[in-house]
Length: 317
Image (cartoon, rainbow, N blue to C red):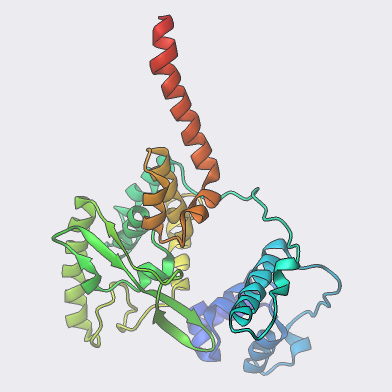
């Protein structure tokens, strides 16, 4: 079935999703030609009054192996379970410790923006409405995760001390809908923001209060909500950023790229890894050094050059 024509006839992905009672992200995936599970494809076909074979092309997946990251996650989970069982003397030893999981690959480098790209993005954001502008700036200056920004409420912002409290995260799943819970690492952190961000948040709060009054929003304190005042799905942020980057001819933008960019800027400017790790909310500093090893190596190279400039090259001069 040509799903793009169905989307156009229905008036857009969001409207078609409501009519079929299907998450719009699945419909977007179909339009892009991405693979779906049998379960989701059957739901979409059934909503259209078609059989699975009529609506989709079925491909039998045979063979193949699990990726290294999947094996490592499985091993970590199994090891944790057996470790607890060993403490409770349910088993005599942890068999997962005798397994040899594959080594973690260090070749992958996080996607981040160069300083000049960040400048272009923020200049484009200044031409957007107050809502999108505030969201983009928050991603850029805090390095927070997507769900953490979407879970922000006004009581978490200390305007006087220029701090934002990050202690919750908004997630979405087809089985449970939208849920606000603890952060990924279940910790609480405070992020200091610049005066420019404070001024922008004050402007946004004024606009937000006017919208809440005029639209009759329910009792909510979330910064970013839907038009009816309800909590917004995290995936909608990616849709907004994709349209934003296309509108201004910018490189592909996703929320996590801002996070990596923020960390890279801090490390390259000489901020210690412990501070960066706490700002990002990592479970430990080793996670920070693993993810941003390439930036740390470059920072070390600059430090070596600095020592050479002061101690050796001036001496020769």
